[in-house]
Length: 186
Image 1 (spheres, rainbow, N blue to C red):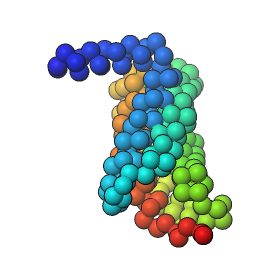
Image 2: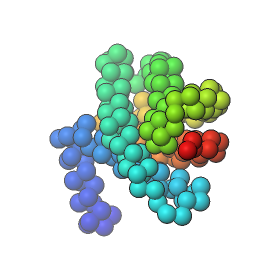
Image 3: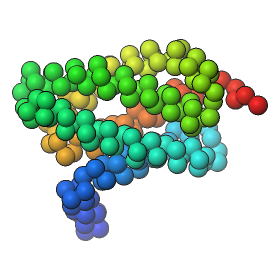
Image 4: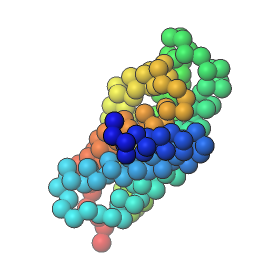
């Protein structure tokens, strides 16, 4: 590894150790932003929509990073940090029936109301139509990530792994959210 990359990684790991919540929040925000840039390009947006990008970064910094940070701490406390197969299965199940539905619903509400500035009636209709598909897709994808995360990844790195995977998931959600966009009211 090049000396610049190695120093950067060392700095990052030091920040993660000294300021875990802040580092995870910034990481989640950065990856949410990068995910949005890729999504914008994939959907054919020629000029980068900076307001949308900043709102996605804000979502990562203010919500995704902190939520994941505390969720993993709570799960480790509930299950006493165990990583055996039975405990990991319980962690993944608990995560999938609580935080997964909430995170997907919250993202869809945030995206519709804040990012797209749509009225609640339109956001509600979109959620009613698309949420079951989004959640079902989530349940076919995220349990595998959760299993790997809880079984093999140390606590301090779990949010980072989730943020990296969420980079791809965010692209899926963005493409899904934009695939059936209702015309913006005038």
